[in-house]
Image 1 (cartoon, helix red, strand yellow):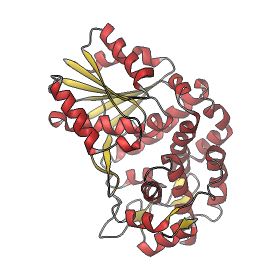
Image 2 (cartoon, helix red, strand yellow):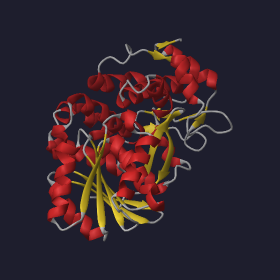
Image 3 (spheres, rainbow, N blue to C red):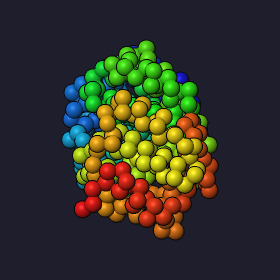
Image 4 (cartoon, rainbow, N blue to C red):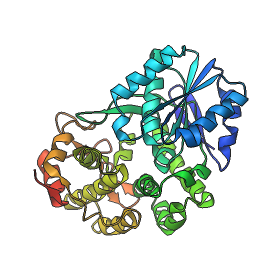
Length: 365
């Protein structure tokens, strides 16, 4: 169990095989609510959402299940509006709790519903994917995508509990396992070279969702992220290091109209931002050569992925790290260590980022 500190207290992240069966008792230990809303997408709901609802009902908790269409295209203000209206129509009040069961889209969307419903109700995160366990469910970031870019409307809303049961990863489609594991490699790349190397050595077992290997890997990623967010909950400085690969990655993902997987986009972003760091003399020469093989063992050849570089540049203008009209990028000093820069990120010009995107097989529109 990992404890995460917030401005309002602490919450626990339970990472344990078989822990899903303990969810109702773990909730009761931490919360006293009149009604519980399980929110899950229509892929995960039949597999895990209904089981969570039934377990809660058996424990005497008044619980209902709400679903939305699976996919990044549902992480919108429209989906948020539909879900909040459904909660109101079902009689949920301020003494309610949201239980988010699913992957990264669900953790973000259901978390934003909880953050804003009647000005905020508790949320319990039950991640069912690598991405959600390793990254999205921890740290309290919630939100939705808008036309201008990814995660640009949202709120900080820490969960009361996160329960990550690595046994459920066997139900995750194979490609999604690879997409989510990119975030684990990112944690190693910015904070722990030994962890990065261990992930690479264990990649076969991680892709097979072997709980004996996946559990410790998830727990280590959670420990690393918890340390960062406990020091800088609202991303005023140090927490920005978690955005390594995301400035360019989110732009590439948005430019693909979200057809490119999040993990693939972030992996590309990591490589391109490392290229930029090496050219600027910030990142140790040869870092990309050490980073790329590990990512390609997960995703296949990343040099062969094409994207609209001009469109990606356009999305950079609305990146959340833009200050005084200039983007900021997290750069490595070496594999396993971030260069602190100025406030843990580096101000770069639009032209530098455009050149970096174009050099990375960007296709001009």
